[in-house]
Image (cartoon, rainbow, N blue to C red; front, side):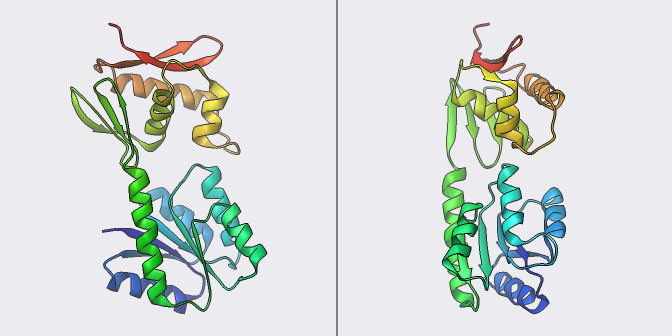
Length: 225
């Protein structure tokens, strides 16, 4: 079942949204502020986020912007009383996928949730094939002659990036920016650790290997051995 994070500081609305989602066979995960929502995202798999905008502390626009800058692409439906066209422009420009203005039709909310999940599922089903190795974006799996394994998200995204452009040298800083985000404080040691873990996971892979280009960065190439 799909888990949906309900970020709403109004307890009555939070309960209404959660109850409606549950009746439609979704699993609501309530949060009353952005910090609580981020903690939930750290420990649970969330398929979609419903977010208010006007909340104490970090507002909904800041919350969504932070997600996108961290390369978290979970679909976000903003539900807010801020209905001005400039507010909508801000919402979409910071990374929201859909926008509803309160008061809303609760049935329409369910229709939009279903549509966003369908769209996300379609995106996540894209595959990348390299020789006999298949990467499935969305469930973070790599399958080759040795079997199928699920990679941690950052490792998968790193491998997917390298294999999307085989042979191309990616500078270390570009990989850090693309995978961890421009504002992340992650240093190059973290990148090295992820590359090392990928090499260990793929040491029996007959199709590819990750090569270090000293002083420049990394690239994925066909395994000729």
